[in-house]
Length: 73
Image (cartoon, rainbow, N blue to C red):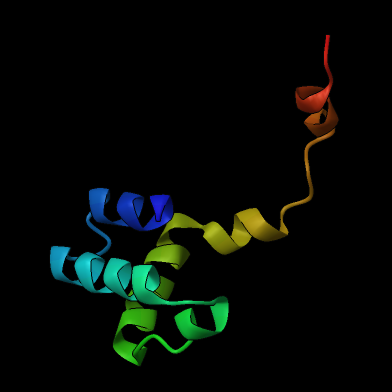
């Protein structure tokens, strides 16, 4: 939900879209149910994700120091 909230904060979703998407996700009992979200809402999320570069983040290789953040010193 944090990403959806950020999309609203960046004005990439309208308040109505945010409300509908948040409600859909909250009421979904499984990831499969989330995937049944109405097409207009999916398109809004996809557009916002593209602008935010979310897909780019998912396919970017981890940084070389990524392991260091999980190492206890």
